[in-house]
Structure formats: C-alpha cells, structure tokens
Image (tube, rainbow, N blue to C red):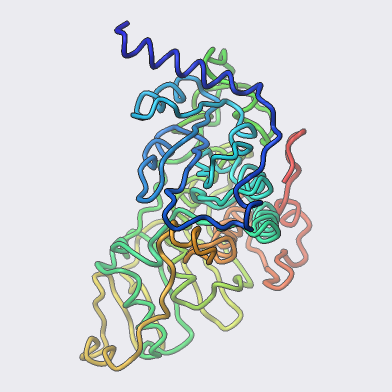
Amino acid sequence: MDEKKINSRRNFIKNSSLAAASFTIVPRFVLGRGYIPPSDQLTKGVIGVGGMGRGHFKYAGTRVVAICDVDQKHLQQAFDMLKDKSVKTFTDYRELIRLPEVDIVHVATPPHWHGVIAADAARAGKDIWCEKPMTHTIGEGKRLVEAVQRHGRIFRLNTWFRFEDIFYGMGTTVKPIKKLVESGLLGWPLKVTVGRRTGFDWKFYWVGKTDLKPQPVPAELDYNFWLGPAPYKPYNPHRVHQTFRGYWDYDGGGLSDMGQHYLDPVQYFLGKDNTSPISVELDAPEQHFDAVGTWRRIEYTYEDGCKIILDGEGNDDVPYIEGPKGKLYPGFRSDIPDLEKKLAAFPDPEPQITDFVQAVKQRKKFALNEQNGYHSCTIVNMGLVALRLGRSLKFNPVKQEFIGDEGANRLIFPPLREPWTI
C-alpha cells in the first residue's frame, strides 16, 4: 500500500475513534435561533454514503465535514473520494448529528430510515436534506413534520422537478404547465395520466425475490443496524444496497422509487399542496407478503373531482392532462389553438426559494419542504397501502386516515423495531 493510502487509512481510523467522544455540545442554532452569517460556508454531514450519498457530496455553498455508513466498505470508498482528510467518519448516525460543526444533515439511507434519522436530526438542531421518498409510511411523515416544525428547522426533499429541470416527457419545466393549469384554459376538474405513454417509466425491475435463502452477513456490514427500525429478516444480499427497493420492509418498488419525482409536480400544479386524495382505486396482481410486485393501474380522486392515474402498462395513447376545455400532450403539445399566445396574457406562478443554502441562511421555507413534501409522499404511500392489501381505499384528507378500513390504518404507522422510535 502506498504512503498516500496509508495516511488516508490512518485518518479514517482516527476519525472513527471519535465515536467515544462526549455528546455535550452547543449547536450553532443556540447562538441565535438558527442564525448563520451569510458569509459562512455551510457544513454538511452525509448519512448513508452508498451511490446516492456519494453522488451528492458537492453542492454549491456547502462542504462535507462528516460521513456515516453501517457498511465499512462504503465508508472507506466515500472517505477516499474526499480531498479533505479531516472529514470525520462514523458508523452510528447519532454521533454525527451531535457534532456542533455540522449545519446540514443529508439523509441518503434506504427509505425505512428516513423518518427516524431526519426527526432525530431536527431534534439535534440540524437542518435537513432528505432523499425521496420523504418517509416510508404516512405516520412517519406526520411525526417528521411535527419534529421539523417544533424545532424550527429548514427541510429540503431531494426531488426538484416542481421548480427546475426538464420534466421527463413534457419537454419543458413544470412552470408553464402550472401556468396553463392556473389559467383555466383546460377547464376543471383535470385528469392527469402518469405512465410510459406520457413519458414516465415506473421501473418495474424493482421487484423483490420470493425465494431468498439466509446467507452469512459480510464482515464489513452491521446488518442489524442496517435493518434498524425494520422487522428482522435473515440476511440475503438482495435485501440490501442496490436491490432493497424490492422489499416492503425498506421501500416500495418503482412506485416508491419514482413516485415523488413524478407526483410532487402534479400535486403542485393542481394546487393540492395542503390536501390529499379522498380515494385510491387499484388494479394489480396479488402481492407477496415480503417482496414488492408490479401493478396495472392506480387511480386517485380528489374531493373536487380531479384525478391522477398511474398507468403501469402504458397501453393507452392518452394526453398527460385532460380537462373539459382542452388537453395537454407530451412535449407540451395541446389541442388549444394559439396556446402560447393565450398563455402570455396570464401571470407566472408565484416565485419560490429554490436555493437550499439561501433558505438555510435566511431561515425561510425551501420550495419543496416538509409540509408539501409530506403530502406528495402521502399520495405515494396511499398507493402502496392499497397495493399491499390488494384493495381500493377511501381516505379522509383532514384526519389523514383511511375510512372504515382497520387494516389500512394499521399500515399508516406500523410499529418500529425496538429500540427505534420517531
């Protein structure tokens, strides 16, 4: 091993030994209710440094000062990527979130950990950047919103299509779609179809295996900690890392993987940021108790008659948005004559704070925050509950619970494995 790698390894081991350090700290926010001088570069601790965590080390205005993972190989790979060898390394996220020098915690673990870690980070006085889906269940989402708001933290969910980037098959950002919907040119209520025909791939390769055999746990992986709040199941490599999405205990297949990317913008341009659908209707094969399968169609209906249809088969050549006065197709094509000219007469959507560093420094809500992120995640989780149970469901958007279905309500917040809580 060359000298550079030897020094890197020494620093890695030295930093890991900080696990035994005292937890008596004074977080920055105590000094002034979250105030950070504008000239400061924000510091970041990344929890979960597999592919997603390592891929987000760089973000303008921030620098990584700590990383954490329950897999020693992931941790070493991530440490080797970083030029700054003073970065601290941990295998227990609770040690990282107690570091006084960390401003932002980036949660890049599998989804069954998102709610627990993000809520703990909020209580530790950290602002939070969380990967999608926001939480694994509706109930965890409720608790996370409470924690973020009670402790005055700034939260960002890491899907961005409501405010930037080309929105899949639409050939445009979401802004002109939002403007079109608000103009009333399509009429009301609207039906939005999300599937391959309108530019959205549900990634049905994220399915689990039903014949997993127990295997020895690799020496570098703390499998018990990887499971965390999830029920204990014997180790098999298909449960962890890149293929965890195929198992109900940790994620929810393609719907959970891509759902907030696809549906958060729909919620936004329909003006549904503060409510939820009143029903979810399902057409799908029976699901395995452990392994996620596929589905044919999931249809959500709002109280005002708006619908979101998730097309899992892609058989229908349909418009992306259909209203009583007009239709919008992929590529921002419409059957409304002179659409661009007509849209020019209407105001643009209200501006949003789309720079997370700015949101943190000014203590203002980010464009996609804990509140609207909770509601778009609830759309996803409503569908997952219906899919697991194999039946259509009614939902109360005020109480945020299913109507007349005890089994569905048990899946709103199933018990977490001890000692984990949110």
